[in-house]
Length: 362
Image (cartoon, rainbow, N blue to C red; front, side, top):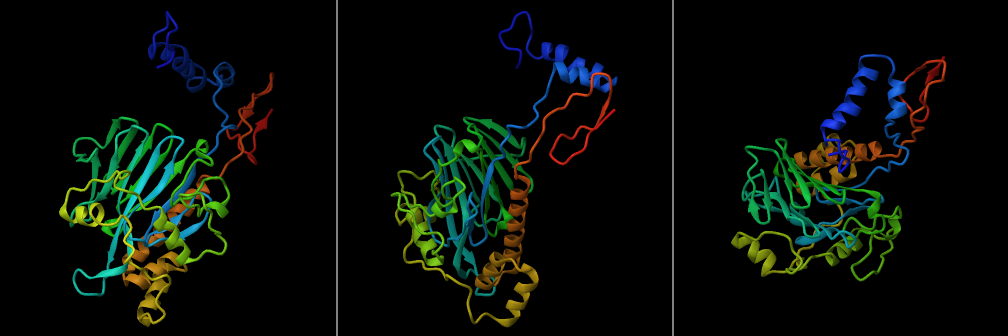
């Protein structure tokens, strides 16, 4: 804590004495705040650059940092985001969605995220997944289940972990990268990643290359760039398959015979699984009408409803898409003029220094 290695000052106590008490005397208990801010200026946020966001939800639909939309319905384990700069690796596992209007246990010919594992450099490994035959989230630390009954947050090696009662798990890494995984009622995991600008042009995987150019988001592991403008669902499927991980690079836990059979002894990407690349043309008219009512024009929601028959899944997809769009809006850069001192022999009213705001001097 500041001030550090500055005798005879004492960390914590000296900060309280020289900074906090003066704030009380000058700002809270009097009208001399301008004097305090002159001696203790705060950040004006002029240099702040908001993080960039990417998200995956529903079928799943991947929305990259640069704004490209990819619907990749592969069955397997894939690199969602990697960064050689910090050793960040975020991996996703998919499973087939349940067919709501079919036989009990029947599966739709589409997939959704069922587990996400992550690590940065030599940090601890965190995995978030649905419990076996359960819609509840299970959090594993270095392949061992965590219990959040006594505390909801943990400071761990190279990361901070928080689990909220609302089926959300948040991980913050030392580099500034942030990851949130949402349970969505057991339907399919939702994933949102925030990266600071230091990751510019330093990412790879299904979320693409973060550099403001969506044209190169479909970059394969060998460096080949697919033309994003002319690529459709089939090209997206081929692109995603190339980002399948290997047993050597996997961060996942395989603690059941089913997981071992499917993902350790079997292929990481199941080539025999071919999903539909467009909504069925002969969909039930009642379902089409229900989808129109629930989705309110959202194309991702409509696709998920028509391919699974699950209105609840479609509604979750629409809500996830709306939240991501709201997040992008909130992350837009704002212009701050910084703190402005009052006139030497006058007064100033107002504390908002953002562009288009008004301050009054007299």
